[in-house]
Image 1 (tube, rainbow, N blue to C red):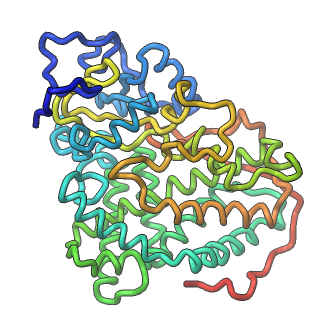
Image 2 (image 1 turned 90 degrees about the vertical axis):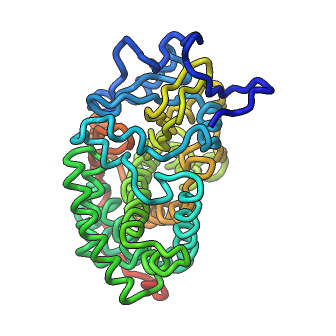
Length: 430
């Protein structure tokens, strides 16, 4: 579809013939692309964003996986413009996905599914309405108590030892058990879901991860069609949109994908900030900065989904003096855009204008749920063990490679041993 040309616009859908192509344009780039799938990128993504911005401006040619070219959006204003323009930048990848190797590790993560995340127009609206209704039915008061009932037994497993890996022993089991409760999933099914999802995000054995994930969730869907409850799966299954099993599966995968990895990484990244930055451990103007301040700083500086919100232009399109090719992924660098020097202030405490939750019609509908889970998880841990310190120098912490997430491989800490806690009365399972 061509747009009217009665007025100049920062977006142009004109063909590329006869038009200048900006230096460093991702269209038919001759030079090497920046790989986002390497350990080197995972170790210093902000350095890579700076290098890309200096060389290419707000649009950089990248490689998501071997043989998978894409464009990374590093400019905040350009990112907002793209996220709010689904007509020119639809989320449907079907015109693209057959152009990459069938065994590409990122294909299961990016290919089309019948869910809200991977569709546009009326299909997106139908899926989105069911998805939002399922999430809006979550009782936030009960969820607060659920996190406590899960957090305290996890803390009790290591609080007497004086050391722990806060990802493997706390953040990971906490977030997937909270998600299991929200979707009405058993612990056994949930463990299979979590393992499959981790394989997808790591882009290691992603196809097997998708198979493992799908098998477990189809069992859950069949159960909740027969025995509905007060949970996300039941609300999806019985919504007026009439989702079939395949659509149910795809939307549940999206829910788990938005919950397990991002929340786990947000907990870990925020805890790392809080145990290494004196602003969160000592007094500042009569009181320490809050967990919510730390969360928003991490969401600005180091969001758990660093590069995501992928779209696929229907036609070559000009933005920020750079031509973007048709049917090739345009990936929003949520981290790079948040750190765009053109919009950064010296102090952004309390500023929540970051893009960590996305923007536009595909913005995260579970922001309140995620904030609650992550903040409560952190507060429960630090209330129980306020003197946590890193067990190794921060420079020795390892990051998991992958083009999409900002994920620590582990978060080893030490603390004075503490006796086990009791769950307060009234903290009941929903």
